[in-house]
Image (cartoon, rainbow, N blue to C red):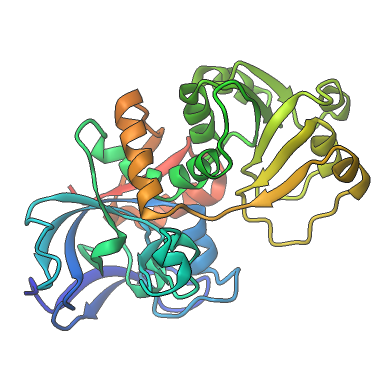
Length: 338
């Protein structure tokens, strides 16, 4: 059954346009669909990239928002296991093909037919709809107000820890202490790693230590980075700009890995020989599978991890995006409908 045929949202009508009140007409729920009453929705830099069509895949009108915390209000006939009132999360993907090799083996985040929440109707609205297999029940102990950013920013930095079997004895570097990086510091500290924060901002050094880093290095000081040569088992880059990657590759131990989760749109450059002779690796990854998101949520509940968020009423969505663009947010922004 459906709870109604109109969703009241904030939409963008064209690339780079402002937000406008926008009504989405919807039909009956599909058999595997669930309708949510949106409680909170995080704002991610990827929302801005989609709104401004930086990646060339956007469609308009667009209702963005893919860090959704909502309450189940209606279900399709095959989704009855989601009871009305259950609080669930909806992240980057709103559905999967369910038939490809990657879906069958559990890597649904790698499904070529995965549907993007920002393109199917996201959380900048009073309600949202998604396929049941893309929804995660929020476990007890997870703070609902700050939970939305976990569903994109959080899983983006948590997924590599699982995929590459990062050991609690590993020495790990985090490049960039922002929306993604601050979560990486908290996760890696709780994971048990020796954590170093690379930051270009002097005032963020103290903040990085309070978030879980054991030490810091200035990412704008080549000599400081060179002093850490052959120190790290794993370095994760959360920034969306190019750096001198050779410096970071040389900071890796033999068999170490430089991993990218920040969306750099320009080609990256590096020298092959340090990679080749040190048997080092470069890699990248998107968000994680639903199963990995579940694991992350349990990890968050166990370790009482909370993203640092700033709250705006959804009616002030334009102000919230201006704050995002300013680069001064600490560290994630969440829109509230309560």
